[in-house]
Structure formats: structure tokens, C-alpha cells
Image 1 (cartoon, rainbow, N blue to C red):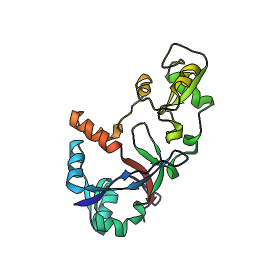
Image 2: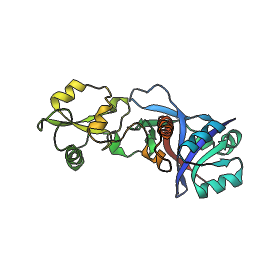
Image 3: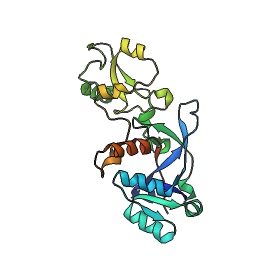
Length: 224
């Protein structure tokens, strides 16, 4: 049976901040994908949540919807109910892509996250994290910041997506995505750590976390 899946994380000021499984489209000229909430198989998705130690609320009428907004967490929403009463949760969104493979709606992203690079104290924080040297070679001069997930491909300009490279190494890397740079900088990637907050770190749980993270979109809508 098909349904929609949502994780409600915060209700504040009439807004619901939530995550949902999505399908993507080819990136536009700015490198940003348009993500659309997608249907899931109810039983299979419930099993995936159980594998990472999470439960869910089945939303199928006004009462269960209200109960979920109080409890929050994951919901599997009946297809007809979602389309009739939650249509504003199902909008297409232009998104950034995170190091975890997940997506963030541009409408809730900060202005700084789409700048080309950091300067001043923000740049210094990343240089300090990387011991003020290139993560690929011993050089400590001509240091630059490199997007691991490329800016041109919708990558964030953020602490978690920038690493320190010297100018020659930066030029050699080009505009491709080299995920091993995350490891060299001690950064997490591949899956959202929050996915495993309730699970034992088993191989199956890790696989599920990677699968879910690669299609999750974070956004918000008006709740009432």
C-alpha cells in the first residue's frame, strides 16, 4: 500500500519543520535539484524505520494528524488523506545537497550557504580545523577552501562541505566530487548521523541510514 512518509521535527510559530522522502530532477543552471515528495510502500518503509530503531504514527484522519503534531517524529500518511489535507506538504522545492546526500529546501537555507566561499572568521575556523595546512599535502601557504560536493552541483558553502587545499592541489582537483576529502578533514558523510540516534550500529542499520539519507529533503510548511 502506497503512502507518504514525513518526519516532523519542530512545530514553531505556526510552521512545521519536517523531512520527507523525495524524487529528484535534473539540476538546473544553478546546479540545484528540484525535489518532489514521493510515495513509499507502507510496510517496507515501516520495516526500514524499525531497522534503525524508530517507530511511526499512522496518519489517516484529523485526530491522528493532530496527535502526530503533538508527538512529532515519523509518520506514514495515508495517500488520500495527505493529498486532500496536506497538499502544501507535497510541493516541489529547489534544494541544496548536503555531505550526507540529503537535501535542504533553499527557502529555509541561510544566505551564506550559497556564497562562493567563506572569508574572515568563518574561513579561519575551517583552516584551524584542518591544522592550517592542505589536507592533501604538507603545504601551509597558498591555502584555499574547496567544496567537496561542488558548488556548481548544488553543494553547500558550509563548515561540513569545505576543506583546506593549497592552490596547486585545488587546481588539480577541479570541479569534481572527491568524497575521500571528507575523511581527510574528519568530516561525516554518506548518511545523516541523526538517523542512527535510536539504533545499534549494525551493518543493516547503516545500510538503511544511507538509503534514507540519500533521498531525504528538509523543509517546512504552514501547519495550521
